[in-house]
Length: 107
Image 1 (tube, rainbow, N blue to C red):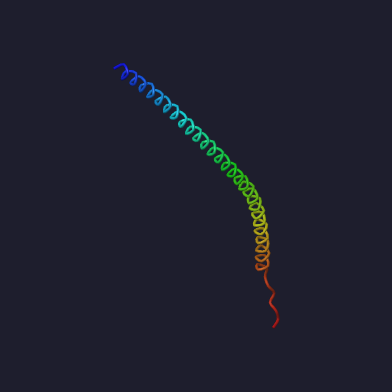
Image 2: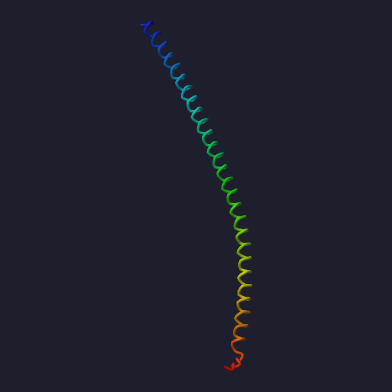
């Protein structure tokens, strides 16, 4: 009976050691999983920052292009106004010429 008791205590000690080893292994696995998750989050944040920088660069380009187009639009608008004045002058001259009495030619 003493021998059985000694074997049981030995088995209990072995089980406790196995349980402790398993807990350490689970803790180690959790640490590795957490580190992998942290690494993946860091990579995602870095990629997000890179995408945001690219978008901001493109947006600045679009803003510069918009300024250029506004300047071109303003220039074209000015040319259109000048063309309108020229047409008005031509029409005024034409109407003035048309309203003056014509001399009859001797046939």
